[in-house]
Length: 213
Image (cartoon, rainbow, N blue to C red; front, side, top):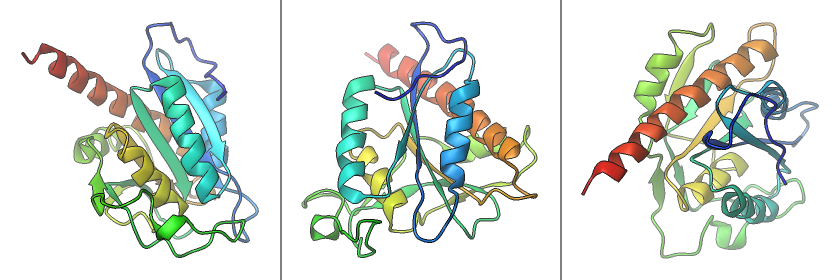
């Protein structure tokens, strides 16, 4: 079971599934793992965070992400990954289904190099208004936040497509490597604000859909 947040969350608090990735390739750390684990420890008031760190393995990511979604029924799912070249926190707009030809840490590829079996849309986009989230977040943090339409065609984009195929209340966040410019504290604060504003947006969408006859 994914660990729960240490924040002051009630039974009525919205559930957010927040995930990161373990080590991969030659990197000795993964900022997504460190940031997600730290935010899970400190928590966010009135939000029930359920955190998970995935191995960089296609089959396990697909199996476990489905399992967690069915277990927790989150209002919002936010996946995080590290982008070694990023000079900002990056919100990914969309994910593609095919073209996954880079092997995972076990040397394996997904079946037919796809996230889900065809027929399926080649691209899926988040149901969140990323421009609105970026505008709100940038007013209260010290690091830049950008939007991208290319999540990298590796495990980051793979999990994003798999989750979007289940629910559009899903977001992928690419984090830069932790450094003097992008400290752990700054990245945790940035992700915290992203979660807060994304939850508020999802809650409004849910309320509006319930009011629609």
